[in-house]
Amino acid sequence: MHTDTDLYRRYSIRLIAVLAGLGVATPARAQVGLGLAPMRVELRIASGTQRSGSVSVSNDSSGPMRVRAQLLDFFIDSEGTPQFAPAWPAEAGDSCRGWLTLNPMETELKPGGQAQVRYTLRMPAGTQPGSYNCAAGFTTLPAADAAPGTGLRMAVRVVAAFYAIAGSPAVDGAVKEIRLEEMHEGDHPGWLGVVVIENRGSMYFRAAGELSVLRPDGQVIESMPFQGIPILPRREQRFLFRFQTQLAPGPYLLRSRVDIGANEIQETVMPVVVEPRKP
Amino acid sequence: MNLLITPVLAVLVGSGWPGPAGRSAQALKIGFPTGFAPATISGLTATPATVTFAATDPDLSPFGGTAATVTWSALLGLPTNTWMLSVQAGASTFSGDPTVPVSAVTVTCSSASASGLGGTATCMGPFTLSTSSHVVATGAEGLLTGNYTVHIAFSFSDSWKYIATSACTLTLTYTAVTP
Image 1: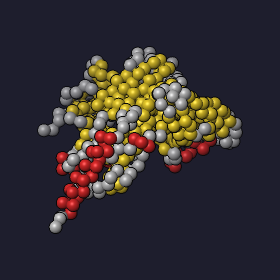
Image 2: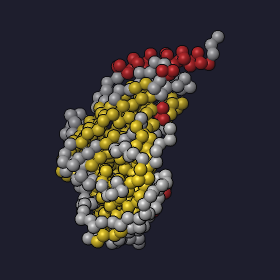
Image 3: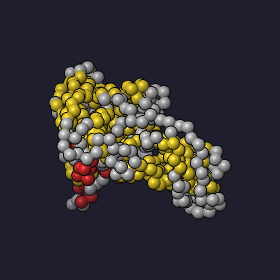
Image 4: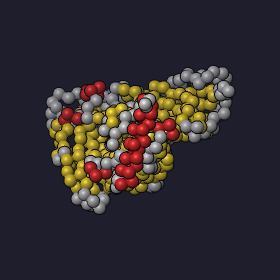
């Protein structure tokens, strides 16, 4: 008589024996050499018209490669990570995915070969001035003969981000919040600077500049640059700065200097106090 | 170029700030090109093509799998542009065994490097795998040209509640982007 645990254990051990064999026998070729040019396309386009162009997808490896294209919505999440998906319903109002077509959608690339993937973006008549974003992703198809037992199959994807701009919308944004948080990543606690920038307009922009932590007398202890990610229309974007310096208890200043492309540099200074850690 | 001074935000970490609640900004002379990014990526490669978890006893998990390396090159980069390498699972469970969630896999960036003037690379912290993109490593593009390498380790937290099957696989997609 076996208990459930015993049965699971027996099954598991049998499975492991099979998997170990598969794992040893499975070839582990690389997913190799996918290239893309350009990785970002910005199109200023009148509503009711269309623009066409091409991106180049290349196979820099010595073997053939099959690549599949996909039209994508994207947004930047609160961690600063672009999130791509075939459709994000919440992004529908700011997306150009429905206006974009690609041809071909799937292609076989010879070793060292490349393919021109033609795109056409048709902006509907009556589109409100503003920027609209979407993306074209190109993904290698995992090799069918590379199936492991229990494990992971790798594919690689390169993405071209598209920004379609209708009219001449103005950049309108500002630093909304700046703060210092205690960070607990891994074994070493540290300090995380957080800057929230609000895009109040309909035009995306990028923040360039730095966040610094200073002593009260103004001496800079550490500075970190803003990530060059887009701040999409009508939303707030968090920027995270993982400081390397371990801050001793005491008063400090956090200073953000940021250029959002509106012919001005915004500076925000905030006093902060690091309190002793509780035992 | 104008200088805009925004009000100082009076948000404190803890309490006890002894000084005034505000500071004035100093004159600035800094400038950054933004928005220019006709960057080109080539040779995006993930090695090996498969990672196998050689599990022996769930009580001894997590099991480390074979580490993977992702490399690529970029042309026409700018240090003001941010590159990101992210990873996401193609499904919420392993194919062949829906009892195994992708959250059983932990992804750890072991090291990341970037070449090229001004190019930087930073590993992000470990995370559990999901169908959402997670940044494994990020940094600034090297000026004009740059080569990038990210080493990644996967570990698998096995469990007796996972039903035994002969094949249990998951497709991971690495995405390189400069959004």
